[in-house]
Image 1 (cartoon, rainbow, N blue to C red):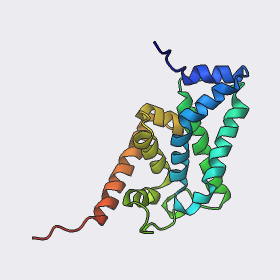
Image 2 (cartoon, rainbow, N blue to C red; image 1 turned 180 degrees about the vertical axis):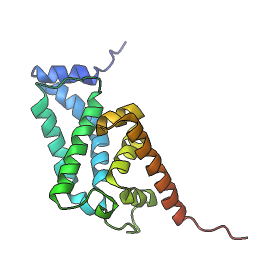
Image 3 (cartoon, rainbow, N blue to C red; image 1 turned 90 degrees about the horizontal axis):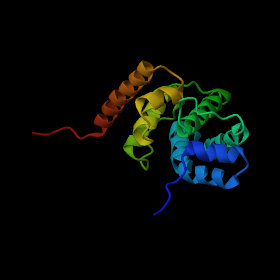
Length: 177
């Protein structure tokens, strides 16, 4: 009988104690989702910064390993919170506002329509949508990751869904009689 994979909490504790393999397991477990999250938060306009933000997020995990405590949030939620903060820092440093004005106009043609619509969302709504729908976090985990109240997270998600429906509808052909 195979032994179950260790939890993220157990891996972080092992890593804090010097087990480098524990970090490798965490990295393998979360790298694809984190990279996708960062890439989609940055959008087309800042896509070239994805690797920097992704690597910096993992570097922050390395530096925080001794003092990391779950405190009610999962490792994954904490990891995505670190990335979210790093994206906000990058947007501020680049002089871009954290709003739909910061997103380069969509419509490149080669990007799927949904990604174009996602890039038009303000960062807070895009973050909530991606964490919930793309990365499978519960609404409570989304609120923790974004460091907002539950109702705020719920509202951001609702607005995101409404705007995405409207945007995707603009791509649909009108029904002809």
